[in-house]
Image (cartoon, rainbow, N blue to C red; front, side, top):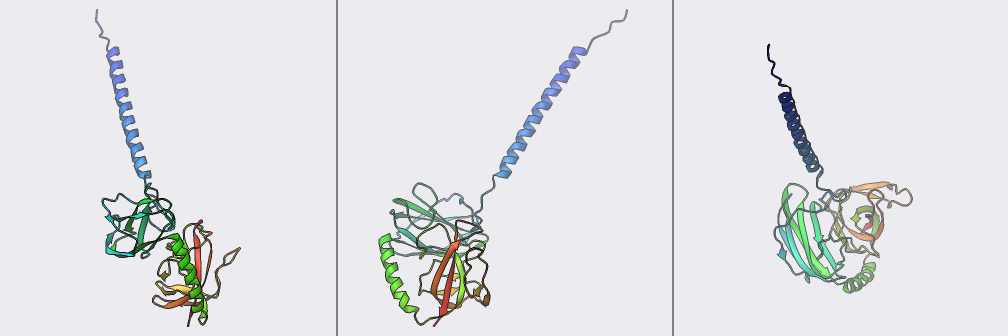
Amino acid sequence: MILIKHHFPKLLICIFLLITACNKQENITSGNNSNNTNNSTQVAEIDPNTGCLKTPGELSSAEEINLQETVAKSGQLTAGKYIGYTFEGKKGQKLNYTTPNDICLWIFQPDTKLLEGVELPIDGKYTIQISLLKGSSTFDLEMSLQDTSIASNSSNNQSDSNSNLVENVKSIGWIRIGAVNGDNESYVGQPMIKTTQPVTIAPTNVPNIGDKISIITTVNLRDSFPKYPNYDLPNSISTLSSGQQFIILNLETFVDYNSSPNRIIWAEIGLK
């Protein structure tokens, strides 16, 4: 009689081990794919209004400055690298600053929230962080703090004085000068931001009536400003070039229907 050896149990064990190994490999692969997916979706958010990151990268160090007087800083900036300044501020003070269009600027409150607008909401140490949109370049940054009461009084006095300055100025038309964040009662002195279109004048803060401004990029001169409800662009009169200087005669603001809650600012300009 011939004896037949039964290998069936051993075969089952081998198959079981093989299936278990395959399942582990699938789990590992699935986990890796999941991690890759998570990494790929963790893309830095870009502010569509400015082209800058909504939240900047880590700042290694910051220079302490005193903004009770105007402080001017300059240096070299590179995209992806950051320069920072810290200052003590009080609730109600307004931060004034001017920067070129291609600089990204963030202001952190003492509670680490990003400051919206220019009015300081709480007492404490604030941090200004700057970088470039792309490439590398030199920068010039001017900063100062102003008490609200002083700002209001000086604004009223300046308005009275500037009204006299524009009496003999002849209007030549209207231009779009920039945009601002928020919905304040007055935008004078507030830094303008780049949206789908650049800031077109310098200084880059919202001017007051009677202020002298310089064109910093090509802009169309129009016979009026966009009006409700369609906000169609008025007729173009001519094209203004960088370097030309004019006097502000009037300002008009309205909600940016493309990127609310920003407000678009147009200015009537003139020459003596």
